[in-house]
Length: 189
Image (spheres, rainbow, N blue to C red):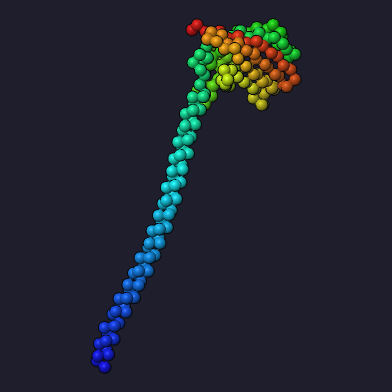
């Protein structure tokens, strides 16, 4: 009986150590699963991060190219003296033969190209502009809340180093139109 008791006392610690070994193994397996999950999440975040970097880089490339496209060519930028003559009109505001002389300044900032019409150092009008296919397109519209709805479109398609020519069309309240010839000569200032 003493032998049996000793044998039992010897076997019980073996069972207890084997139980703790199983528990440790289960804990290790669980920790490995958690690490794999964290690695998957990290890989997913890394992938998202790389995608965001590519998106940011593409935006900077587009922004840089947009800035380049928002500049007047050197041969157009700057001041020009204008001579604008009314060539046809069914509006009471404009008479055929009317002439106007102003200074046109082709300018740009990081967002847009503009043409400023200046008379006696006062800004008369600000056109938004585009330059494409060797043609200058300018547009002006009154505020929608204005009493008179006026839209002005200018197309300048005869461009040389010292002269630019084209036409301006003015529409008032969508019921009358006046057309003008536009001739710009490079300002000497």
